Length: 111
Image (cartoon, rainbow, N blue to C red; front, side):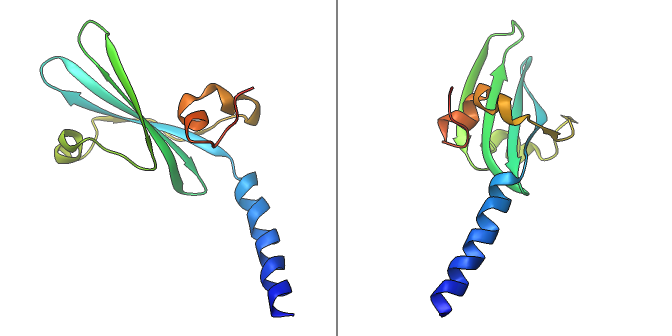
C-alpha cells in the first residue's frame, strides 16, 4: 500500500518536470586582450541543464564548448559579475533539438 502511494507521487511530479519550459539566457564577460566570453545558460524549473561557452577574439573567431549543468571558467568566476546579461527566454518545444547543448546532454532529441 505504501509503495503505491510513493509510485503515485512520482507519476504526478515527473510530468510536471517534463512540462516545464526550457529557457536560455546569456552572460558576457570581457577577456583581455580584445576578446570576450559569452555563456548561454539553459535552465528548466530553476535548475541549470547545461551551459554553452563561446569565446571569441577580435576577429570574430570563436571556440565553443558545452558543459553539463552550471559552468563558469575560472577567469570569469574570478572576474565576478558579467558586464552584460539577457533575460531568460523560453525555447519553443519544436526548436529544442536545434540547440546543440540540449541534444548533446540528452535533454532534447535530434530530429
